[in-house]
Every structure is written in structure tokens, then in C-alpha cells.
Length: 329
View 1 (cartoon, rainbow, N blue to C red):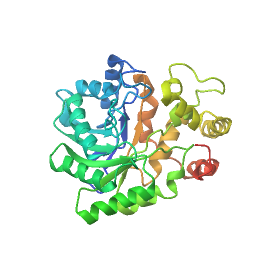
View 2 (cartoon, helix red, strand yellow):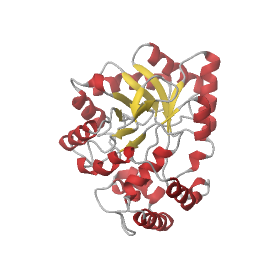
View 3 (tube, helix red, strand yellow):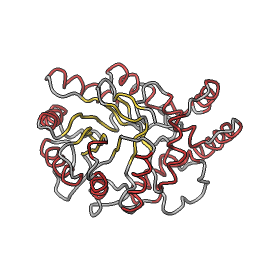
């Protein structure tokens, strides 16, 4: 495993981050513990979760993933960088979601209880809340950091212009600044290269991409037709979102081209797809996930791969259409 600083901070994180959104629904607690153990044995010190996880659940399951992670961390919390998120819907009341001061201050306390910890290393906005003024959100997160409940703050799923505005407002008000951004990024989704990644580089932000395998499509194991049961493509409303993003003829055709290219080089598409994400100098750590511990065998090895320059250029050229805003989403 290799390690690096999270953006311009002094916080050292592994170049692979374990995502936990399957824990508690697609993956039961005992299997989740096996996945965490396997990642830890592979040198991963960076864990990412969210209060609304497990993905694909409903209000009866929200918080379950944090609880599982908290149980596993008991007695070893000091050895891991722990990231979680808020903004998603956590209850029936209208204020049980979003980035208002009320919800953020309620949500961080609830996450601390579920995670069984006194502090969160990286507390992130899961998405942008256009219904709440940025100043209110930034002030609430500043309170969270100054109170010691979180060490750093970040965002996920933000447009570049909104992140730039948030950074500017924090600077003007001399309040805690976002240190990282968590965007979707893979060979099948490259739009962030146009504006978000240049912004992150200029502002010294860590970049923690999720979906480096495009929901599993870039493993090459899925075939056109009905999505197989038990995968993230079939889990509740989230499954529909994944189908909209990737389950289309264009993506399947592109995966086949990529598989042939990588196979001709004697390599594994899963490993190459993650190595390609890590090869971008703007990327700090790629989020990997699993529903079974053995699935981490390939993904963990991606950290050790240095892509041949010629192969990387071919991969870039082959997926250039996914860099445009009009590519399949």
C-alpha cells in the first residue's frame, strides 16, 4: 500500500479508501467485518461511510452501516482515518435532511453515537443543498470542527462552481475550509476532468473518487440484459440510479473494447480501471468497495500497478467521449 497527504493537509491516508455502502443490506455484519479485516491487512487506513448507508435501503435501514463500522473500530479507532457524510434523508421531519445548521449539528452527533467515537476525521456534505444558504452550512461545519467533533471537512457530488463559491465564502468569513472533494470518476465517467479536477489542484484539495469501477461494470463480469439480482444495480432506488448511469448499450460496448485492449496487454480490467484513476495526479485516494472479502484481491493490487504510458494513452483515447458533458451519465 502507498500513502499520501489528503490535499494540502498533513493527514496521511492510504491511496485506496474502503467504501462501506454495501454494509448492512447487501452485506451482513459478519461479512462486512471480513471485508474490513481484509482491507486493513492490505494496508488500507482510510474508511468512508455515510449516515444514510446502506445504499439501496430506506428509512428503516439508515445508520446501519455506521453502526457496523463503529463496532468493528472498537479498540482500534486510533489506527484509521474515518470519513462519513451528512445531508441525506434520515427521518420523516422536513429538517431531517439537508445542510441546514439544525440538521448538520443533529446529524454529526447521531453519527458519533453510531460510530462509537468522539471525533470524525473527515466530515463531508454528501451532496449540495441549494435550499440552504452556503454561509449557514459553512458556519455550521465550522462549529463542528471548532467543537472537536470533526478534524476536517469535505464535500461530495458538488459542481465545480458551487465548490469554488463555498471555498471563497469560507475564506472571506475566516471559517473552516473544505479540504477534499469526493466525485464520481471512472473510465466511463470523466466529466470532472474539465473543471472540478483543475479547481481541486489549484485550491490544494484532496480528491477521493468513488465508483472507479462504474458500479462493477468495469470488472467485465456483467453482460447486457436484465441486471443480476443481489448487485447494486438492483438495490432499491439506488439500483435504478446505477442502471441509469451505466446499464446501456454504449457502456457495454465500451467495456468490451476496454476488456480486449487490457487482455491483449495480459492485464486484468478491474486492476487497470482503478490504476487508471490513481494515475491522475489530482487523485488522492480511490474508493473501493466489496460485498465479499475476496473481491478485494484485485482492487487492492491496483495500488501497486504503474500503468505503462502507452497503455494509459490508449485508455484515455478510447474513453475520450466520456469526458464530454453529453456522454451517457
